[in-house]
Length: 332
Length: 271
Image (cartoon, each protein chain N blue to C red):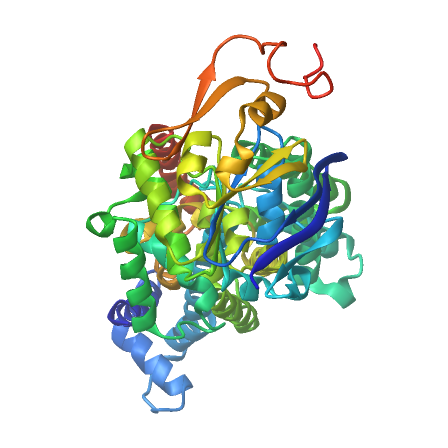
C-alpha cells in the first residue's frame, strides 16, 4: 500500500517535472498554478503563453506518455505470464505492427474510416496479427522460440504491408507524418487522446488485477492452471484480446513504441516478485514513470528537432533485452 | 462417494488411449495405476482431473458428472500433481504452495487470509519444506520441487489427490518419503507408478492398464503375479513374500522364458 502510494506520487512528480523541461521556460510553480486554475481550485494569474504550453501541449503529452508506459508494461507482463515466455511483448510479437497496418489502412486509404476510426482499424490489425502469430507458432510446433520466430515473421509481414500502403497511396506530406508516427511519437497529442488512453489503460489495469490470481496459476503451465480451477482457454483468450485492445489503442495514438512491454515487467518482477497482485500495479507505475522521462528526454535532447520516443525506448530496451537473453541462457 | 470413473473411453489424436476403464476408489485409500509406457496411465489421470473429457462413459465427483461442474468446484475437491510441471518464473517455494489456495478464493481476492496462511503452513510442514519456504524455485533439487508440488496440492485441501509418476527423478529415500507421506494423508489418492515394489508397499489397491484397458485390479497381492507381469510388461519376474509379510518383485534380465507357467494363449506373440 505504502509502495503503491509512493509509486503514484512518483508518477505525479515525474509528470510535473517533465513538463518543466523544454525550450520555453516553465517552472514547477507555474505547473502547479496552471493545474489549480484549470481544476477550478484557484485563480492565479499566469502568462497566457505558459498556460497554453502547459495545458495544451506538455501536460496532455506527459499524461499520454504515462498511460502508454503503464499500458504497454501490463500488456507485456500479462503476455509473458499467459504464454510462459519471458520475451513476449506486443512489439516483438508483431501485434504493434499489425495495429500500425490497421491504423495506416484506415488513415491513408480511408477504408471504413468514419465507422471504425484509427483505433478501430488498429484493433482489427492487432487481432489479425495476434491470430497469425498464434497460428504460425502452432504450425511450427509450439514452444517459446517458435512464438518469437512467428512474431518476427508477423512483424516483417505487417511492416511490409504498412510500407506498401504508404508508398502506393500516400502523398509526400502524409508519408512524412506517418513515418514519424510509426517510430513512436507523442507529438501533438490532445486531450481527447489522453482521455481515450487513460480510460482503456485504466480499465485494462483493473481487469488484469481481478485476474491476478488466475495469472499466478499459469506459472506452471495450462495443466496445473486448470487443476487450480482456472477456465484456461476462456481466461487466456479474454486476457489476450484485452492486451490486443490496449496495444491497438496506444498504437493508434502514439505509434508503435517498442521494448517497454518487454523490459519493464522484468524490472518490476526483479523488484517486487512474481505475484501478479503486486506485479501488475508495479509494472504500470514503473512503466508510467519510465515513459514520461524517456519522452521528456527525447523531446529536449536534440531540440529543436524532437526524437521519436520509440527510438529512445529502443536505445534503452535493446541492451536490457540482451541482458534477459543472457540470463535466460545461464538459467537453462 | 468419491471421484469415480465409469467405463470411460478417450481417443487422443485418433488413437484409443483409454478404453472402457472403470475406477471406484474407496474413500481414503491409495490406488496405484500400473502399466508400461503408453498404457494410458497419464490419460486416465487427465480424465479423472477433468482436464480432458471422455468420448464416452462418465467421471463423477460425489455422484455429479464432472463436466456439469465448474473448474473451481472441481479444484476445491481434486488436486493434481502432473509430470514436467516446471517454470522459468523466479518464484519462492511459499508462493508455489500458495497457488493451491486459488480455488478457495473469491473472484475479488481472498476469502480468508489467515485461513490461507494456515493451510500453506500446514502443507509446507507435511511436505517437510518449512525450512525452504523462502528459497527460490531454481535453487531446489528435483526432489524438493516434487515435494513443493505436493505441498501446493495439499494447500488446496483436496479430498482426492491425483499424482502422475511422482517418484520420477527422486532418489530412493525421497521416493519412500514421498509415498509414505501420500499414503498417510486422509485423502483418496490415485498414483501412476512404474515401480511395482513401491506400488506393493504403499497402495491399498492397484489397477493394471495395458493399451488403454484395465486388465487387472485388486490388492497388490492379488494382482502382482509373475504371470501378469510377464503378460503386461513382457518381463520375467519372481514374486515372493518376505519374512515380514511384504510382497517383493524381483526381475530377471533376458527374454521371456516361453516354457514358464504361461498357457499358449497368454504368451506374448513372438515379434
